[in-house]
Image 1 (tube, rainbow, N blue to C red):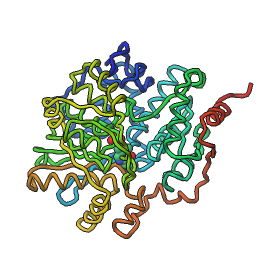
Image 2: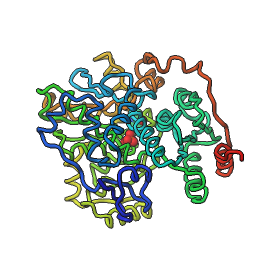
Image 3: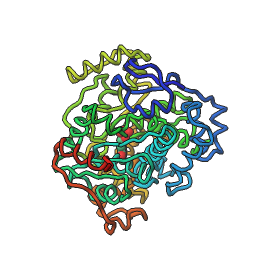
Image 4: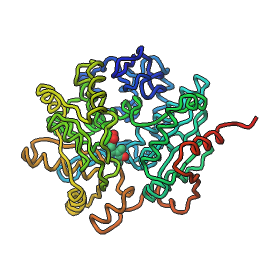
Length: 469
Ligand SMILES: *Cc1c(COP(=O)(O)O)cnc(C)c1O
């Protein structure tokens, strides 16, 4: 399989090159040249596969001959052995909804599913090429910790993660900074999340520095992350009883459009679901796009579901490219216009297509909390605030259509214990603390506090990477 850029400016590359490239060198996003397809019989034959075997089946056409099959199999096995549930992503039924629990990885959020695999994949490719990689990223919480757990202790890789000092949640801070492996460097900058992001951008734009220190990123635009996420859409469907497979909707709490884009590809690969439902919180740029055809950001407002507090969805360009039938000119023109005017829109026919691809809804901050409370009262099951946004939207749509006309699967993107304050606010109790968080306050932590200044952060990175000669 070859990979092309949404902006059409690169010679097609192989899978491993696409993974190492991250963002395409022309500024676009990478996509496979063709989308592999499975028919109904194929999918029925997936029924008895383990999650790992299913991953193997789905990855194979995307990876091609770039990685020997037994090596790929090992990478998958390694990646999912760190999950604390044998199904990796179990489907549970609560009242009339199915919940796909994506939070059984080490940092208790769905990002582990892709980042455990990406970490192993990086390590394999780097060992093969005898190269090294120094990952640099800024985080407001979830991605940074999942990335750190994905690469901790691995050869040929160091990771530098910048978080705003004192401004991520207590659990997130301790999850990140208690990883003491030699290759993990936590930087707490005296500033806000945007300062961290600005510093990373400025460092990446210093190409000499970037090349000298082999810097790379792990943000949600890496193709391998999308690919890894396709698997659980198939797995969710295959875990449904036969009688429930006729009219299936999958509801996705969305921020950067990464998770739901994987679902979109799953559908195009032949997964027989009716619709994907995009659920937003009050930062509902994507929800507005699907409803009106206009894509226009506004101020980010903080909500109870902070991992969805996003106004520019970094994966959206991939869908835009498909919506314009793989025409890179169209994608380029649109995104230039977006940068200039802050808004882009589509034709009436295209809007019909969008609304065929996705249904949508959003939940306000208050609705998020009342959904946690009502659901807990009805079922005893505690939702995290991101999952609650999806559940609220699923309930709205089911009500509009008439109950029991369809099967709804809600993706649970985080464990409630990761967001204890929201849960406490909603139901007056704190969620039970899972094993992996129990000793978190006793762990030793390590991080460097630095001013929010690019030159200082550069000096710090240089001092850690330059081996004394
Ligand atoms: C990252 C994240 C999301 C949003 O996922 P996208 O792929 O950015 O749409 C939702 N919930 C949680 C808990 C997350 O960490």
